Length: 309
Length: 309
Image (cartoon, rainbow over all chains, first blue to last red; front, side, top):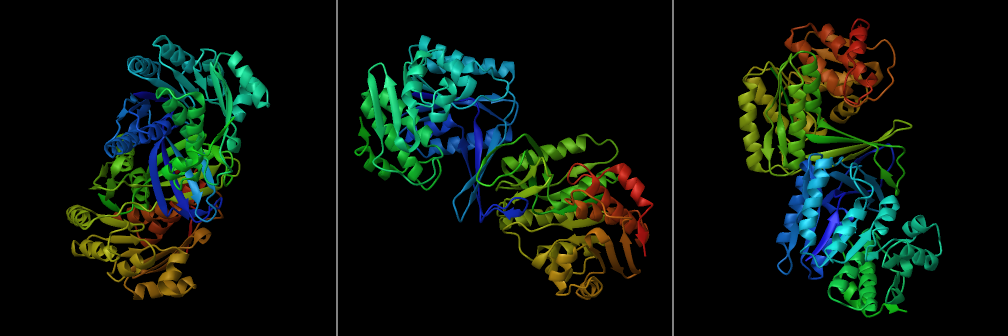
């Protein structure tokens, strides 16, 4: 199985309104809820690609219970793969995120709660769970921001634990948690252009990618928006781009790329195959009508049309 | 005890953000949650005034569980009065309302979920509970909108059940539920100027109030914003106004007025005393720093300064 870690899980709520007007009252016409946080998005895509996947991180309170009920529903709908909930309980309630979508324009206004503070005992309980799970994993993805209370060097610990268990580990985060995590020598980091510039101080992707490798990452896969992915690895460097611009909602496109990279790694695809899959999944996610889902026919179609150079 | 009915309860969530910008992403700096829906607000003020109060209506799902946990917390903090939760379970989750407050201006953007559909069996279970509770009540308040699934004539049924148990009943709703409820001859209706105009077709408060009585209400207490209350009753007519305009947040001011009227009725105050209390509570709610709470010193101060004519 593939293990995904989401320390800052969220109950993602989407409200559809005719148009958001500040300081007015709105009747919400449609409410949707789903488990959120980058690692849970990655897990959903991995399961759709046919991989058994286990999710861990934290969940608590009534919002955490709702999130876990949605996960159980997602798992029950799958007959081909296993999606296992190994989230660790916390006392505080799991945060909500609210996306307010204007029906007319499709534009989204996002409101993100900070999330509960994780106690030292809860963090220790998570580390025990993680060390057990990582031993059975074919690969690990460490995804997203850190909740209050979790030490800023958390990803460094988790990268080292995976590497000492000889399990490939991908890190997808930003800011100081990325800086500290990279120093622990993860197999892959997947920053976007802004995260890469913040880490290295350089806005030139080629130079910044090389610098990120010097900081400790074995391979760097930078997502450059509509230009696709730039990968610099011990086996060579590639750029993978979709055949043309894709219109839609970019929410979750990065998480789909992570799922493409990890599934390709576990299936022992060479790098160009992994990158094609990641770019096609990412573009198929932008094109999908529901934010964060990918459209399988679009994915299948794009997969043969990614230019890898 | 006083019974308050809230068929469309809500978990009221308040998000504080520096400033709400449509189509941008916002980190919420402060999250507060409390039981919402007009009857629950009325109950909170009645308890603060020293009355035992029982709340009924519907609650369901994880949001309903959160709402009930908050109610239990409110009840546990009171040593002087009893606040009893007699909400009826429903399968669907209780709706949320999200108020997004701009920290700088204090302006609020409101997002209201529609709420779960109540089934015929759930409605029947509620009617049984209500008929049991109303027999022990000194007065009943029927408050707010109807959730999907509840018949539009619901308040007519509830008014008639209270009247046949010889329990005074106050109705505070709008639109067709108000029109149908008024026809069942409630003791008091408390429309605001807009609700009164919608019911009667007249924008002249004096004429509209008389018309509302002809439609069935024994007494009509119209809330006219900063001009206070206009009461037309079998015992006479009065206007009660605060000494001057009060600045602040009008959320919950109408619910505080209902609590003032009902507590005065149960204490057998004459109408001028009830109206003074209702106007003072209402103004003290506008002045309070937390939306929907009232400020006791402001209330005590204003109580002696309400002009009743």
